[in-house]
Image (tube, rainbow, N blue to C red):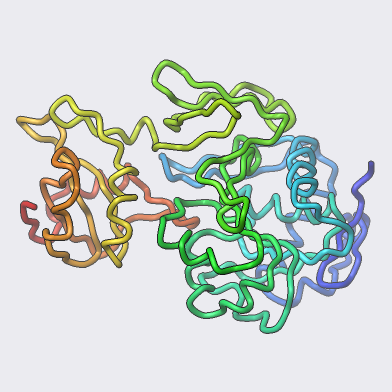
Length: 359
């Protein structure tokens, strides 16, 4: 099938509209619409690859060249799963530098969706009062803010994919009364967005991710996930995501192997502690470590506001932070993930720190 057109806010544009010097009318709506136009020029150039940037959550962001055909394959998997069809309205509110934003555009091309673009920020639904969508993808921060500011508008989106960061229990609980569909997505730039989804609400909600049928998952000796997804990735991917796979093929992510803290011989996954603390701490925070003479590594809680150590009393003893450190700003990626290496580097530069105290 030849994917040679896209519908943007009710108007159909053909591939030739992006191969000449004519500027489509939608470009003048915003700087973000201009970025959309620039990506579409790259897409309809028919080059075999597209440039995407990794998020940088585990190190320096990198640029990758990814296959156009595999992006089409990925879009087809998602659109088929969600039963998206011609004319369905899709909301683009994610940056176009990264795979998540680019894939929203490709899905619109593949399924002939009507794509609406809004500048990515924390409140993407502010511009769409009393407007219904069939599909949107958001990061957790955007969903949180929409729950606070635009709950009715959020419910007017038939299918919402949430990715780019951990979904805590509080957010999941707040989604339970909604009658539309919310999904957590699992994937990465190398898998061209998600290869598995988890239903967050409704009768078919689940604590586990279910991979697409074409995806095969195994674990290495350290219980890190190995992904074989030939439709979207040329090679088998060896991740650093510590996981558990169940007999029905579903799985859950425990944390990142390279985030593990070895404290006194006990291996601690910081994401597990963060999940325990999420209901207790109402400001941005992260669990990390500092070198310790006796333990090798000591668990450290970093927050943006001072908290009382009494909040930590119910944590298992080996999980209890040895220090609470306050930073003005915890380093995050644009998609809301903790920059863990940058955070550790900050902690080692003592002059960046406010006075800390032992928990």
